[in-house]
Image (cartoon, rainbow, N blue to C red; front, side, top):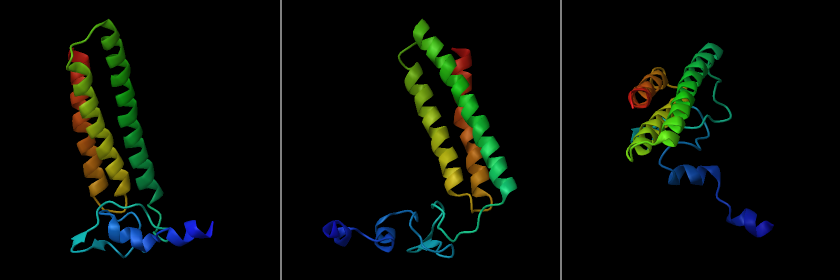
Length: 136
């Protein structure tokens, strides 16, 4: 057991290796090298986001998720009924882009406008998914 503990890296060593600031120890350390850290997991001593902001983002994310589930159910019915070869990859691609943007918005919750911009950007590929699923 002691050999595992001796070979284990510390959080500060991980911060030097990782390209985004997931292991920062203080909320003031927003600079990684010569560029600002936009996405990071909150540190233990970070201030909590405002409850209203968190609730609004969670509701926005839930709406995106429910719309994605609707697209998925419609796609499943279409695939069972026989769909073109491009149908599933196109829906999957735009769906994954939307999910990645939504995840990025929650990782940047301490920024003033970036989370909202990412959530709004996540609606664009989801809208494309809805249009493809509805029109096919």
